[in-house]
Length: 405
Ligand code: NDP
Ligand code: HSE
Image 1 (cartoon, rainbow, N blue to C red):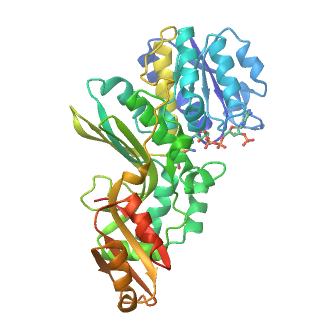
Image 2: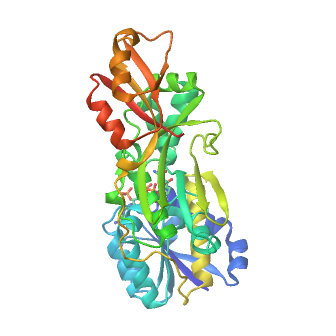
Image 3: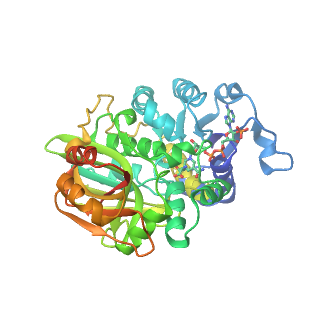
């Protein structure tokens, strides 16, 4: 018998409990042993809920029970998740989590602790919700040197951008809907300002490149400045706007960033809409490979957590290797990164064109019949540094969005 404790009975934790109960027989078959949820830890009571019979409020009940083999955390935040993770591994139990904040901050330390104990610290649900991406990076793409990752890594922001694009809805209304659907973080600033996608690209890059990418080193922009008018211009250009987490390795140098990009229908990520996430990985041997699925939500995320539980149940006393070392990967400044830029400036084209061309060089103007008092254009492919230098020379820049060339 494999005994599991689930920490947190919110969106994800309740999904994990449901799946382990409902799919008990098929999961036990896959493990080759019986499996039981012995405890669920939460702060609240859940009167009348099936969880009542296993609900506890004190973590010590779990850690002091020698029968508990696996602890699955879905509480979120660093405190007490970090302490609980350490105590679990130190007690010789396996730990898995959907908590990307924890993984991005303490991943290498907890992996090393798990290794030293011959146990596992797994975190499939921390990136891409239900999409298997951590396990493929760790176990399937091992023949390869990964050179680039570009992902739509946050379900909430993709849901918002898609509704703004396709239904013309307002940012705030769609954010509220994403919160009601259980997609958003407790503090949705993490979603809309790009911090969640930043942690996720840091986790993926660390696994792909084998060194620790500190999420705090990654240049990050969110979607709060994207407006309905930007989508009108994008539509005129046949483009869409997506929040990307990107990292790439060129000549041993590594770049990473999170920012909204205008992308064309030719991008494999163009059709990734709503809460779906898409992760495009490029390896020297395999070329392009894409992962697609629900990036957030109760059951998709529970599917990934339960997959970790099953993996740990199959490897109760055997550490599964991962490439992520605690040695830091120094990221390059993104200033040499090159792309086109979509720019909106105040004033009309006739009066601004000369100054804009003098600063940016060759540009392609973009006009919308219904818009007066501003002027939009797309630059040629230039570096971030060149963009910054040109932008200094032009007054009244209202918007700039990178365009995936
Ligand atoms: P919720 O807020 O819905 O659930 C968290 C639960 O944990 C709540 O019931 C909360 O209780 C409880 N909790 C918080 N602190 C403690 C504590 N100290 N002891 C016991 N229980 C505690 O969050 P989610 O389920 O949405 O997310 C959980 C984690 O999974 C987060 O790290 C999130 O980023 C991640 N995640 C979420 C996804 C999603 O789609 N929602 C997808 C992928 C990952 P209370 O409400 O009383 O605070
Ligand atoms: N808030 C996150 C998202 C949850 O919207 O993608 C999944 O990690």
